[in-house]
Image (tube, rainbow, N blue to C red):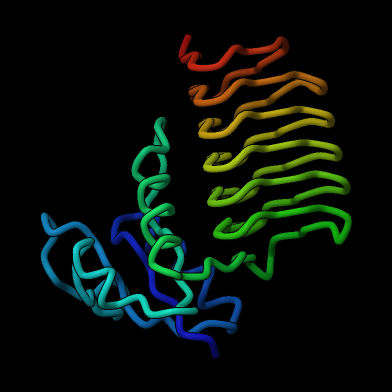
Length: 203
């Protein structure tokens, strides 16, 4: 199995571990997290160091996954993505065995497809995205880099979502809608019209 370093040690990391173990493709080397956290075991995997130790832990062609969650803003995930790419790490696509991804779709590096999600035909998902449990990405959807499509969301056909956008749990996005970059849409919202960049939809 391929050794994989996880960057981030919170709740999303534990969910990532569960998906990675289910794939049986990777052996988790350990976890790197912020210095504000104690070095401890996370689901029996060791904390190997902190952010400043990454240059020593990542060697050329090392494989790593950003396991920091994204609630609202993508800034931390973007910073870590740029950092570890600059250090020469490779970021695999991680797909749960219970997720479905059409062979006629594109998914960028460092994206995780979590349990029960569905990525349909002719859809495109950017780099460093989270497609969370039971999310539906329908045909011809375009999702930019560094997005989080939360649990149970329904992204209908021909939707376009700009980079760095957060779609909350249980949202329904009507077919053909365009959502700009760095938008935040709260849980359970039904979106039937275009949303401009840098908008927060919470009511």
